[in-house]
Amino acid sequence: MAEEFILTRDIIQDHSERMLNIKKYYPYFKLTEGAFTQFAGGRYEELDMGYILMAVLRFFIEENNFREKDVTYEEYKAFMHGIYRRDFAIALDAEEEAEVTGYIFDKIKNDGKPFSYTYFDPADKKRKTVRMKLIDSRIKDDVICYYITSDAIEFYLDTKEIKDESSISVAQVLLGKMIAASNFRGGIEVIKRINSEVGRLKARKNEVLNILSYDVFEGARAYEEFVNTGMRWFEDEQKLFVKNMELVKEAAKRIENYEGDKDSKHDTAGEIFYLEAELKKAITKHSELLAACTDLQIKADEIIEGAKYSKLRRSFNFKDALRTMMDRGDSTVLEKLIVPILSLNTKKQFSLCAIDQLLLAKPATEEKGEKIKEEVEAVEYIYEDELEEQRISHNYVAIIKVLLDKLSACEIGEGFDLRSFNETIADIFDGIYSNGDYYSMLVHMCQKKRYDIEEVAVDTDTFFEADLKEASKGMSDLAFELSFDDEDKVKLMDIFEISNIYFKRV
Image (cartoon, rainbow, N blue to C red; front, side):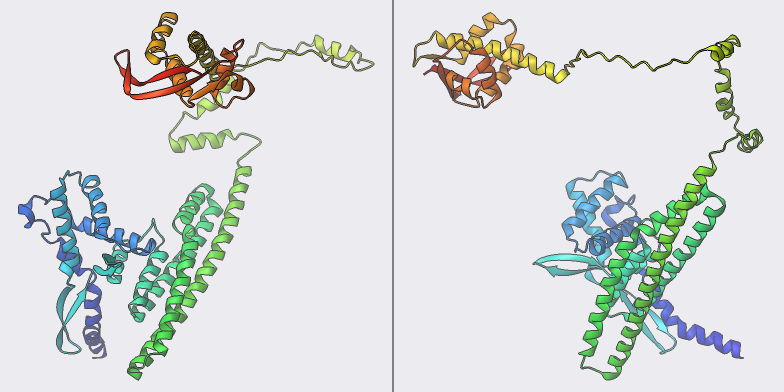
């Protein structure tokens, strides 16, 4: 009779709690059931609502909780744009994409209403309704922003043991949500989950150390995996612990100033006190885990370092090598043993007569110093960029000499334009229009509108002036100005045009 009573009590008393636990899974199956069958005549049935839902929840967790920012609808649209092309490889035009994206968002938001279902509570003898939302909204700076709810985070965490992120960090994000929503009882359950994860990591640390003690290679792989999945998140986890402790303290202050029902205030204060105690315990255990992992790191380095030296043997064990090859079924290792032996040069022998020469040889009475030659020829290296600079400077000087000769033939106040100069230089240099140095020289020259040879001889400001100084040796009392006509275009090789330049002697 006692067993039957316990059975009946468990069924009745636990039923309500089980129905509340089911609620986090209810929206998933509600959404995935025929999600795209009736929409747009079934044109988008290849899309998987289950996958899209999990991707959207992960996106919101990243933005809301790790980056601590709300999500606008435009950001959600940009995320979905990549989903269509990357994961489903379907090309939608702008109108179709907007239609499908809006439909999916409305489905996940449930048109702004909570997902709900009813169940019978045998303890209270009445039907109750359970409600939950996946995505909720709020207005921030006159813009509608969206954020993920704590129920949705809990659902996402329950669907997979997180490996690529810290499960402790994600659980603390959920804890922060629950504290903000005054769900202190649920927060206590989350802290217990965190303590369980800390205990698991402690046990895993001991397992890694045990593996290292008998198999250093397997232990090194286990240690690397442990570092990547557990140790690297310690700093972020510590920050979240501090943040959640501050939230608990703020909640305690609010309940102290609460002037409502005393019984309710007393119960809530007790839950906050219990939550704070559990959180302090979790922080202590997490600090102990950090110290244990630091100790693991030191011991692992020592074991791996010792294994490196032990592998450097003074002699080679052929029996062990044969056994290893038979176990692996691979005889290619023999190549490393045989090839060095085959490459020995046995023709080189030490003559026995040389022994007498060594014994009878008289050592030198004094050491002869090495004669050092004072004169050492310096080898000069010319690099490719230096050759390029020499070529460019040589071409610039040659072209500038033609320009100065043509200007010297002009009276003061007279000059010529670029067309006239092109005709002159084309007669002197064959293929000048195909030489890029000519055009680069024009560009350098146009940096200034006036040049005076006497001033350039004293001070050079640009590369062009340095070449002008070289080209104008033997000349004096020559200055010229440049003016530009953007309307008049000079055609070159029927390929491109440049603005006409007028050169005037001053």
